[in-house]
Image (cartoon, rainbow, N blue to C red; front, side, top):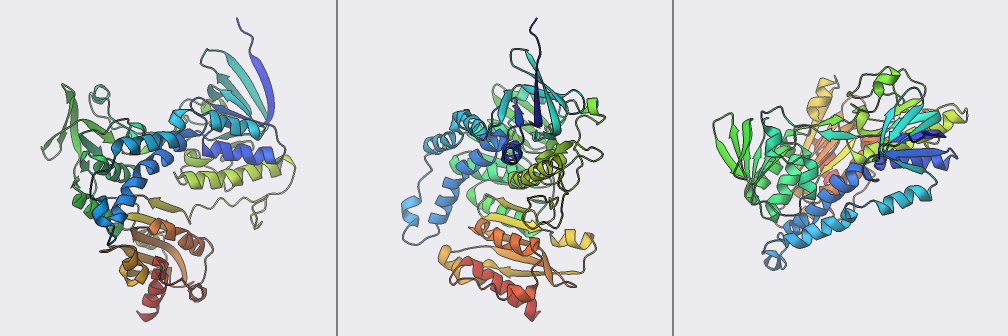
Length: 477
């Protein structure tokens, strides 16, 4: 019988995705010994099955769409995409699903990597079970950070497992283009993957249970994306639920609640995420397995003085950039507490801050057109009790939009708090608007008064001049 090894650290991090990596980076920079536990690939969901591969698939799609809107260029890009080259490009950016480089980076910052499944087995204690069944016990003097992310949720449909449906992982890692693809869902994963695979040659049918796409954004965002998907050849059906799914002689057969029968080669369910917390030993420290972990603004789990939950698992914002932001806050907070330094909410540089904001959260949906938003939508602001006004302008009111693309279509909205005269939320839809959202994030996060925004002069002729049009519309109405 192999003897169980025990290792002592200042900090133990469960999960080596971008969130866990950033926690480890901050704690190591503060001089704290740190262990990172990972059961799959160092680099996590984002690097191999989400952000990176999906955007590698989408970039050629968007570049071609933009080129087709430019006089003198459109005739040169009328042919199909080279799907084989696009998939190879995607494979390159995932390092062919090898994590040697990411593991070397962890080693370079001085963090110890323990491969295997990590479970809490008591306060400040993590037991790691390796692929060979061997076990190690890691103890943490100061903190354990849970950075295990989320898994895709599949609906409870009889026989679904035999169908072998796609989740987001399959959709971003597939090595061949399916002839026909059914996508179930109307959120970010569903719309992005419908955009990518339709452009790569699939016949896409998008089944959306709700009234429209991108339900967490302003309604017009989903309307623009649905219109563009339809124009590209996708069959977009809203108000539609899946009643049954079977696979017959290799063909997926979908029956909807309206009685329609749809045949496809593959089916992707993009119907939500759940926290990866069911089997990490939460019960050994008095917590309910499988649930989201509530935290304070230093990312410390409610009721604990040593356990942190960073990124998706706390359900504040299921976005890589927000998770990395939280990781920087959590790492600084762990280091500060370890050295006995008070946590300061007013610290402007975040060295000892406890200000993991979850209100000014930006997001970009890389469809064609792009949709980008930060802060509250009009409905969310009104529901929260703010006295607000929505200011809308057409993106083509900025000269740069017309120069960017013939037939440019898009819309911008800012939600103004009428009492404080600051922005509570901003939404853009249109080609290239993803690069506009950080200016909106600065305005919302910084609570910049509209009177000062007038002096943030956009360069001419850029699409950013839409900011001036928004301010003029607010002044004149």
